[in-house]
Length: 71
Image 1 (cartoon, rainbow, N blue to C red):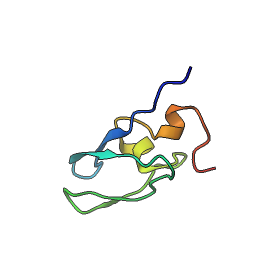
Image 2 (cartoon, rainbow, N blue to C red):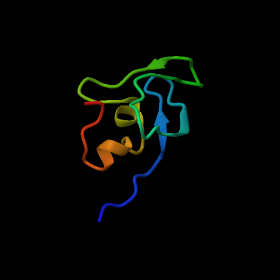
Image 3 (cartoon, rainbow, N blue to C red):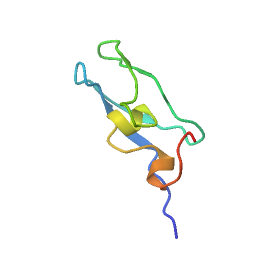
């Protein structure tokens, strides 16, 4: 039995530390995110599939369910 993925994640900007809780898409990866604190464009770290896996408090839904993300 697979539990439902968590759909809200708090992104923390690595540049200014601003935090924002966002709803993650379930049907696509989010490669870019504009920080509302400093305006910096966030991108995933090398090896990560999306900004939520790199900068979020919760990884994206496919990673939570141990499925291939963006593949």
